[in-house]
Amino acid sequence: MTEDATAQAGEGTAKRASRAKMAARIVLALALIVVIFWYLLRDISLADVWAAIAAMTWIELAGLAVIAAWNLVTYAFVWMTVTPGLRFGRAMVMTQATTAITNTVPAGSAIGIGMTYAMLGSWGFSRGRTTIAVLVSGVWNAFAKLAIPVLALALVALQGNASAARVTAAALGIGGLIAAIVVFALMLRSEHMAERVGVVAGRIVSKLLALIRRPPVQGWELATVKFRNRTVDLLEHGWFPITAATVVSHLSLYLVLLVSLRGVGISDAEVGWAEVLAVFAFARLATAVPITPGGAGVVEAVLITGLVAAGGSKPEVVAAVLVYRALTWGLPVLVGVGCLLWWRKQTLTEPADETTATRAAGP
Image (cartoon, rainbow, N blue to C red; front, side, top):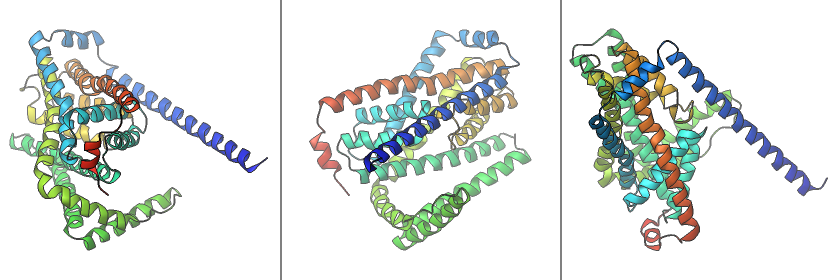
């Protein structure tokens, strides 16, 4: 067998292995989702769940539609702040298309990041600019996911519903948030500190990779220094709009859940708005590890369990969570597919925007 034939055979084997691995992930994810929903719904009547949804008035449905539409556009604002020069329309197309991929495909987060590079690149933004945008938006998103549970638990405690478990969780959350902010601040303080953070992080990750027999990482100190220099330039004048847009995006998502609960009949006396915020915040934390695409099943489990424990009627809670997920998981998929098809058509028929390319040029 020639070398070319051997190489082709190797590539074919690798592709088959990759397809088999992807198929296995899909089957496992679907099985997990089915098991989770069976467990959550096994002791309630679906007729009661549908009755709670059907009882919503047209005014309540219209209000939900407006809030859901607003929630769709908020993450575009985040990307406009971390990517100077990115217009609203393109930010919407990119965020909805990548969200659709993340919500439906195993390992969708990684594929979504790849799509972000492809889409911004097609509009003339350099890989360096895109990398900073991805990292800064990711860091701010992580800060929000850490901060909102702490805020929610503090609000619950102020309302007189403190418990040892909640106080402990709040203390751990505060500690984690402070640690994350300190590390980030040290990294931005100087190139030397950024290099040290990269060295330490690289050693830790390399030790973890050694446990699964993977090679160590390399060059993290150079990457953190480069990230530090570019991030300082972006944050010097943009930290406030980035922070504001991130907070608005997270709270808009929470508002969809709160209005869904009130729409199906769960009053503030049953589950207070601060308790809803706490459950929502911990559901967001649960998506930090992408066990299933878009957290399908996992988010529902955390929300339903937490809201029922807080005092909500299970059929009504299930109804509200299903409405919430339809508007924040299902709707973005439908919109995102349309955005992805539109972008594909545009890239095949139109050249990159030269003005944007010039403005976005950078290392």
